[in-house]
Image (tube, rainbow, N blue to C red; front, side, top):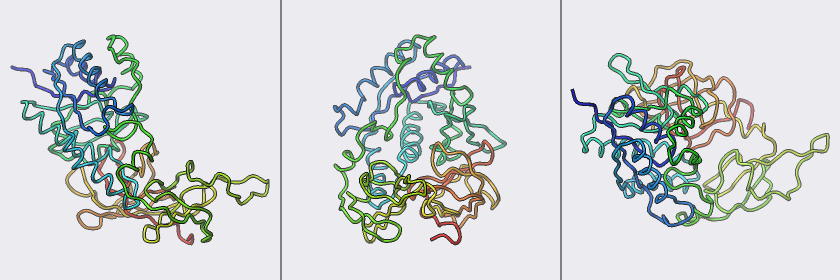
Length: 371
């Protein structure tokens, strides 16, 4: 019986490198695929595609698997980056990693892998897939501190049925140890951060090249104009640093101290940015939210009931109740008001370790009695 062929996305990072080795150890016929998805200013200090390709090819040589490169730059620009810019232009704060996974890593990449004769695909994500009867479930990684199911919540049954996540069962510390033991050339390479496939770069400077923007008034919650913002696209709800009010006279606490200022609202119609003082200001708290563009892993919305949600990555699960509203919208009501619920980010639902899916936050409301 011939081995099952697995095509794994190899980025040049430690996670996908160790995942490729694990698959080979498990007896699969492994082929690496390096995706090039960004070409603008690829020679700059912020885009390391060339070095990443060298690292991926070097690792493939060490562990003994074939690797090839594929260019998805046009698909990325059309399916992910264009939406990313539209959202920012509309004053929202999108999460490109969510769309990148759904449209590139588990669509364009999956299609290409199938053309190469793959039985399955794999990535270095920290998550798990479990078959339950005739359904496939997406589960959190065993290492909850590295769990990436939040970014994978738009995957569907067809995609999950073809996907392996080798790192889902082991902690990140063990991944580093394996890389060092194997003497992989990238064993000490830092984990990548920043925009999916675009890398780490000065964000405002980067957006400046693609968006039209217009300065406008910056006001406090009592309507007082206290400055000028540089363009609504460059701010996100809950933002504290880089607002530009460092020297502004603040309201004093009884002990003489003053609380920090936070971005609390964006009024796109009037091009006004509202800031408030204090982390627990009512304008920063939401008792419920509405989301659209819902995507459910089981293929249908969960029944109305109590469950848990994340409204941003790196957030602990919070208790909530869901009320589906048609095919693609839903509302969430939180047991405890949530901080800086941000339009454009994803609201992702969980039942224990099982990720149910989610949607894009459209709006939220303040706790009763707070305006």
